[in-house]
Length: 149
Image (cartoon, rainbow, N blue to C red; front, top):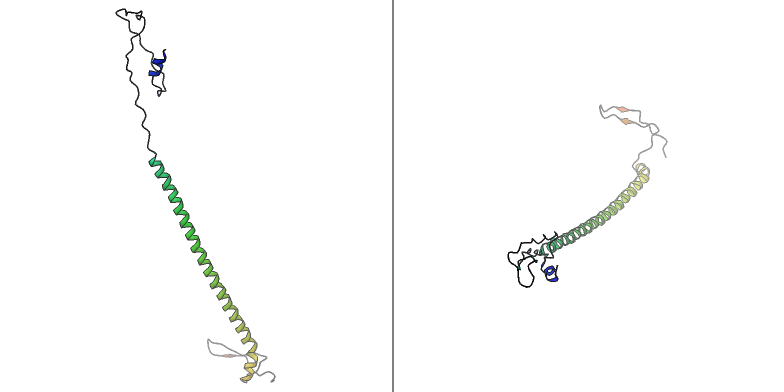
């Protein structure tokens, strides 16, 4: 095969080119070309493949990147909001703990001063406690005064 014929052969085809067909020559050509086959000068070749545009792929990549950045922003904002709420709740818990401790100390002070305040009102301790039954209003036990101070 001559270099000119090899250059005319399409390079994009992956299948082997069909073998040229020999036609019997009807007349002898001058110059001894009677044995060569007659080939048409123009051959049909495939149209070049169209290059796909990369714009849709780039748009898809940019959309994914934008969605990821938006998701990260929303996650960060939500975490910051939760952090502020946690800080506020911890502050409230601290205030409530202080209030509870204050109320416990007031209760302890009242329990400590109760006998002296009762004595100031003229009350005395009893060895046998007397109870009042609420269902019928009966007094259970005999009220007696213990030793006087």
